[in-house]
Figure 1 (cartoon, chains in turn red, blue, yellow, green):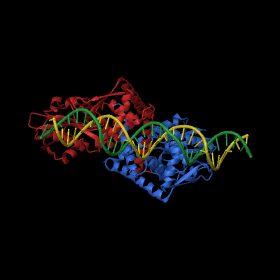
Figure 2 (figure 1 turned 135 degrees about the horizontal axis):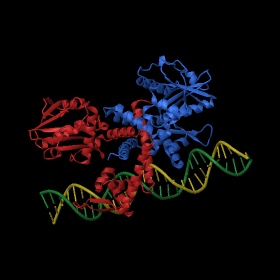
Figure 3 (figure 1 turned 180 degrees about the vertical axis):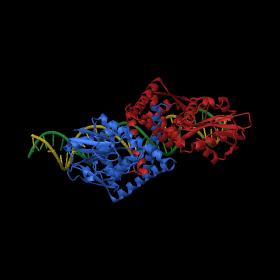
Figure 4 (figure 1 turned 45 degrees about the vertical axis):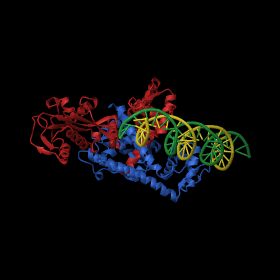
Amino acid sequence: MLDPVSRVRRFNRAVTSAVGALDTSFLGRGRPLGAARVLNAIGHGRSDVAEIRDYLGLDSGLMSRLLRSLEDEGLIETTAHEDDARRRVAKLTRAGRREFAAYEALSNAQAEGFLDRHSQAEALLAAMDLIASALTRDRISLDEMDPRSAEARYCLGEYYAELGRRFKQGFDVTLSRDPDAADMRRPRGTFIVAMSDTLPIGCVGLKGTDHGYAEIKRLWVAPAARGLGLGRRLMHATETAARELGIKLLRLDTNSALPEAGQLYRRTGWSEIPRFNDDPYPDLFFEKRL
Amino acid sequence: MLDPVSRVRRFNRAVTSAVGALDTSFLGRGRPLGAARVLNAIGHGRSDVAEIRDYLGLDSGLMSRLLRSLEDEGLIETTAHEDDARRRVAKLTRAGRREFAAYEALSNAQAEGFLDRHSQAEALLAAMDLIASALTRDRISLDEMDPRSAEARYCLGEYYAELGRRFKQGFDVTLSRDPDAADMRRPRGTFIVAMSDTLPIGCVGLKGTDHGYAEIKRLWVAPAARGLGLGRRLMHATETAARELGIKLLRLDTNSALPEAGQLYRRTGWSEIPRFNDDPYPDLFFEKRL
DNA sequence: CACGATATCTGACTAAAGTCAGATATATGC
DNA sequence: GCATATATCTGACTTTAGTCAGATATCGTG
């Protein structure tokens, strides 16, 4: 009853019935689940028919019929793709937006109901994040983004908060050499966010300089996503981007209060070098030749 | 993207696709899911046809046909219930047990595969326990059990381990007044285990004495099940059992290093009294008149 | 502009799940 | 013993999901 496998299977059972309950509440809107799923995919911004079909794993014949039934209900309109008239693009009509909102309300109510009934919602959410990240590890995408985007700023906020907790003296970003956003955009550098579904769960910045090297900054992995090898993936993607940009030498600084970071750098071909800047926080410095 | 509801919904999506993958692997055995589910319910010890139907939420006509198809495959046998010939009882044949074992192997392999791919399996399991307990809170049953049963001994082991962590001086059960199992069995007392699915997640003992009162001992709630009001439910069930046994006065001892316990007792009608035993661990004593 | 590739649609099908109205056998209370 | 309730079964149905083989329109390339 207590071995790991039984615990996973208990979790599976619990979750299967919860998922089934949500499906049942969706059926309450008088539409088969297949059609509801397509409507929701469109509502969530997937407009390209091929993309929806791929996302939901549907046969093209079935997909076609589901679209037709939503069209007959007056919930969607389809038009030819503007660049390629073979492809179709679906979008919600006014009635479709209303219906989509009703599904959203059902989903939200289910989620809220679940949270409301628990006195330790934060612990529950952390557990959910952890499991969701683990289950979707193969679908984590690394996307280059503007360092000023909402996703990037969220990651940076979490990163600073974590440094504040882990550094004995705390962390005040205004005392650190905060990189200029322009230095972390192409062509000088880049900024990469790891996205799991719609949630940012990690980031890294490549900051161009005028000193013959670029710096890696702001490597962060959300607590819920640790143990998935994401730090390594982010570093690898940054090095690839640096090569594309013609960068030959990378440097970075870190702090010995973050031992897992130092370990990652040592294991992936970085060598320790003397201090190369006067930032007050780091006490360890590395470089890697590409 | 970061509000609690979105996080729950992200979890739902992640889990839905994982559950779907397990269903697909079940289909690999060449039997529709409905029949597979009935076979598995029987394999897991549900023999009464009405009980299976209720558990799986099936229509009686559909249930009957699914049973017939499993019978035609030679996997189950049905007989009349011995007390009521209207009811039927299903059990696995030898071939049925083999087939059930194959499904079990698929489930186990899926669970193992999931755990193997993660470097922090223990954190993942703790998160799964937490969520499973939260999702099944309405299905937590309180069962009177022998204090020597495997379930009870598991709970007690966890309870002692937790005291060891939380008491500054540690906890050695041999130094404490370990109640005799016979005192926690009817008619002198009882022992109640809270079961969530097949996992024991809490316990409490009612220990009969010859001093005109009974004692409540070993109240424990698994970390993953805290915040669900289970402590209160266990206490309530014990008081009910005590009344049935004709007990008029209850006492208990606890330690101020367990503040949530003291709080629970104060909030549920217990009053603090002077020390009434010489156990070295407790420093707080309560009683309640029934 | 011909040709093969691609995206979608249509028709014709099957399998699975679920519904519903009786039929049958047995149990329970008066 | 009889009326009523209960558990299961059977037959006749519908809906949903999914499959597959073309048909049709459009695209990209030489």
